[in-house]
Amino acid sequence: MEIIAKCGNRCDLCPAYRGNIGKFGAQAVSDGWHKYLGFYLAPEKIACVGCINEGDRPSGDCAVRSCCADKSVENCGHCENAICPRLRENITAIENLEQASGDITKEAYETYFKPYHNESILKAIIDGRISPTSNDKTVENKC
Image 1 (spheres, rainbow, N blue to C red):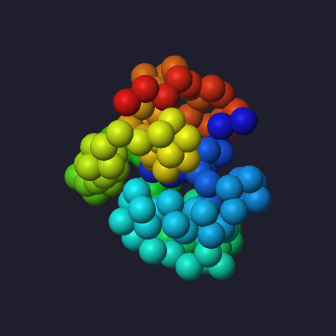
Image 2: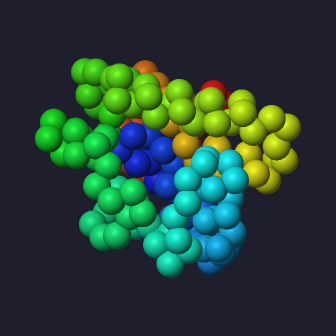
């Protein structure tokens, strides 16, 4: 089942999501994020409930989550400024990090980049190809 974050990221694919952490291991996620995404987070702080739930998140209360709450929208796909400068900055950062990583393995791509290719998910919501209120629809994620 797809679980779409406020920004359009795929929680269900994220290695830090509470349902996935056992599959990947917190130390491996910490090491992978440091290697591919350039930041360090201690393994004991990795587990995340996702921004659609209440509880602990490694990112704390991110600006995109707060913006969606302020605008009373489920996610950025419901906003009149869906791909705003704040979100565009996040999208561009992931794209740049992926390019800088060079020739990465399929496993590394699936684990450390694919969950954060949110632009295609948000466009699918905007275009009505997936339900904006259901987190159980499948959309092909091509960026």
